[in-house]
Image (cartoon, rainbow, N blue to C red; front, side, top):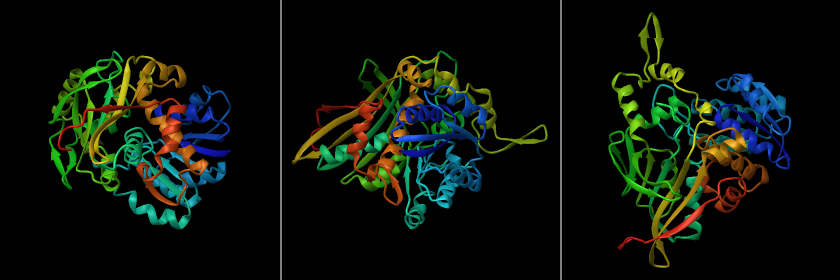
Length: 398
């Protein structure tokens, strides 16, 4: 039994709090903290057992360390903004407790998605004798574990990976993002990148797209090539890899709104002067858009996230598709959040459980695929994200 501090009270924080509360044998005491404590109190009122709530400025490493010590936390789950990863890591180092997040650090002034800021913390975490688990969401997170599981059980060599993320849900609103609007739009408007033949290749934003036929009654959808951070670690750890790409679905309505907003400058992340004040257009747009946490009761339909993996087993070509299908309405019934938050929050809870149970608790900074995938895959089936492995026809000459 362990004491866990959850930092962040958005949609993902709500799911993590619900899922941790369901496992008192693992998470005996829970503290949910945010800059706005009223958000924590609202979530706490939904839970089947009492938890503590607290106010914290996650940009301030000293505040984070002080709260860790005050609560006597044994693990910190960071589901705050990616801008705050480094300050929370510093707080964990100061207090000497393990750290977990769901997305890589981003600098507020630069749309750059990279582990280059967090990997250098490895030696400091080793010296402190504590672990840091990076990217324990779905993508990144579960997709990394899918690749590690495929490498362990299905392939001698993996040659190509296509990570494919479909949100086939509908909230009925003209335009909204399924997670933090600022992070979401920065990600989508950035140039696409993929790795092939030992080097990174770049595309214009949303330039490369194709149709993919999704299972579970979702059917054909247009998928668009993006850059996503899990590729950065997977190219280091998947042996034999020749190419890896990341794809995501968008409706034409979403893309039309995004193009208009981009054309008029509302997606800019550099400050502009307005009535004597400096404002960042994207941050102002975020204030106007619906709060992703409000989409839960409105969203119907499914998500499908998985990896199409091609390689060789016993000298023969092989192709498998490992994926999960999640229902928005079922997620809301359980946790009062839609499936985008659910598919991130459940893996965060499972990653925390892996650390506290000792399965993945080794000093240093680690990505998901660097650990044994089997216990994590087991828990995905137990705690709400069951997975499927489909054998597909392998292309000739693999």
